[in-house]
Length: 394
Image 1 (cartoon, helix red, strand yellow):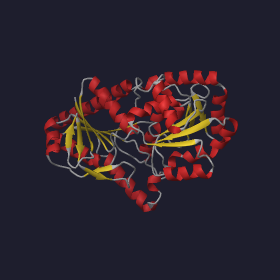
Image 2 (cartoon, helix red, strand yellow):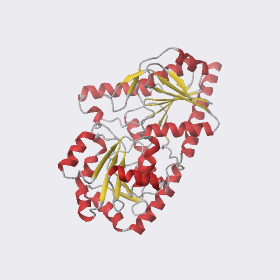
Image 3 (cartoon, helix red, strand yellow):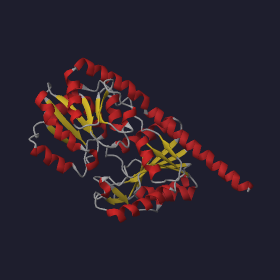
Image 4 (cartoon, one colour):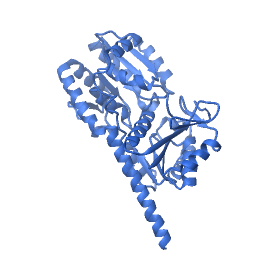
């Protein structure tokens, strides 16, 4: 098959969506498919390079840090795409590249699959200033958008429930994002780990709690800061390393300073993709307090690296974490610190939990991800053939 992946965000950003797109592209190629990617570029003109269409775009940081909006919806690049004539168009995100995915699928008669990876519900930070009318208008437009697709992929059961609650009338398939188990693994370079410890001012004796992800209100990162002093009272040689960026970062940095945590909390910001792996290897425990897990990619990457995880209980993550086996789930905020301290106080059991975490992650490989997405493509293509045959005989 010829498959076009479109994504609103791409390298050098290194968030879960970018990693998912790269994993899928790599795996589909290994499965014998021809894959190209279309994304907003940072060049003054549109270019095609190494299988990627970098479309002329403008800065859109007002949407989220690092976002860009495509400014060119025609021209030589689009003509080249039409000549290539993809069998499948698979879009990630609902901004400008969604429009381009629609143009290509309509022009070429391609199957159009869409992955919905953003937590769109009324409680999200995206809607804090919209008001009731604004929310209603958004979800009306959102339903219209998704009704254009042949099929929708979601990475978690929780996201599937959100879409069904919005009365989305298209087939929905739950396909968890896959992890590259060769790159996310125990035993990373000790040299790289020593470099990161020096960079962040983390001593060899220090234990490291790691968060990787966006810094937005709904991630509930203030809970980690609120209860971190309790951990420090029992385990003073502990550092909290927060990797990622977002609109809530400045407020979190101010809160850390106000609590006197400046010497124990590190804000790494966005890090390059080829460095993310070593940040997991640096850590002893992965932590998150997010109320909702849309992708669940960072916890799975941490588990692939042999880390026990401490996560807030929710529909999606609860299916993957077993208390005391590969990590801990907490519902009450007070249980967060207790879970972390239990792991720190039991190093031999923590090692066993990390081993079990790796075994769990092996069930969510990028190879499995690629095979499941391929099944969705084939299902849509078969449905399209049946519809065409039915139309011809009508």
